[in-house]
Length: 244
Length: 317
Image (cartoon, rainbow over all chains, first blue to last red; front, side):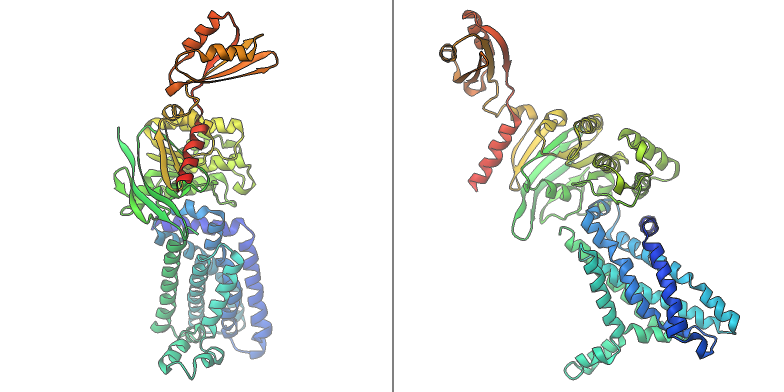
């Protein structure tokens, strides 16, 4: 476990020794504000909740999380440090988890820095803070899924731009899988069960439930199993493609 | 002697080529094994398999008696490895980086700090400890790479081209560092520089196209050179043809070449079967009262042997 922490710490420090951390946090907070107050019409709605705030998170993550994850493995591959990392006395699982937790912790920090949002809504009205807490938990879980996807994609290439684009596309597919855009493609020829399964894979539907304040086991299981699956794939891919 | 590294029947294939083809060897404690070979001969691939980065297609690697396929983490604890090109995290400082590696190696608190300080002193990194590695010169980067490989005092040290890209002074430092550590370790280093082998290695393995083509001490390998025990003689004010004629008369002489240069006659006398002929040659010089400017015996040149064994291999296949 301590090895996981050491790797997490190194990656986290890595975010802050480069401008990535600051750029990310500033843009994340800025866009959150813009989306919530302008696009989401926070004041016009006249309701003391953070529904509009959370409803933009899937789209924000789509653009921003691949930017955090693209370097995780691609950079190690490009510079050859992967050889250094994987000949240290650590297991593959520890390396994969360490990197994942670093990005997750960093995202959690960025998310925590949106607290003025929560202060604002509490100042203006009397919101259900339980629902808001559930929203934060759901958002963080969903971010975890994005990160696991991004980390896995990053493991397949030396090129960070490719890692970014492909991760964004894969995330978009998960995001949209409940939408006609994706479902129509399968409708008609794929069995109903498959179509239902695909529509059930959507980030949006699972996140919607949680952000309404209902933390259901199946939604938590959904996000956690996505994370586990993609991290597992990540470890397998690194093991297979180390030599490339 | 304790055998620390045992490699048996190791093979690795990539898409179209067999990079390592059935290689076996052992390295004992106290040995510095020079791993030589042309580019693409399989040196780096072999080292990557010894350190557990790549899994072999066939064969086993045992370090300190443990199989790396069965106990990868245990084996990696006993290994220090400098990968080819000394890759490092450019955003970290040497202090931060060595602290990270030391912590992963299980060092904590005071013992970690002490070990980092010791290692830094050994490789002379004091002046750049707090600068990002990305901004350091090649020589410093290489030293950071060496520092991370030796900081936990491993039994087995695998160094892939440790002096590549260093200036002559830095090369000298790294070589003496390696020599000083050699006694209680098994060290494998790859290099293109043949003088390095003479300077630090107790044993040499030459690989070509994935196979071992020569294995022996540097002196043994030099003895394979057709220049081994050849004698160079330089005399003043003589006719080259005449000198040659006299030298050819000697017993056990295979060939004589004489050329005149700046009023001096340079002769290279090659013996049959690498026999020692220097006494005979100097006797001849005295007998003819030649004014000898220079007389020395060749040990044979490693690069001749290197070229001979590595090109012979590619011709055969």
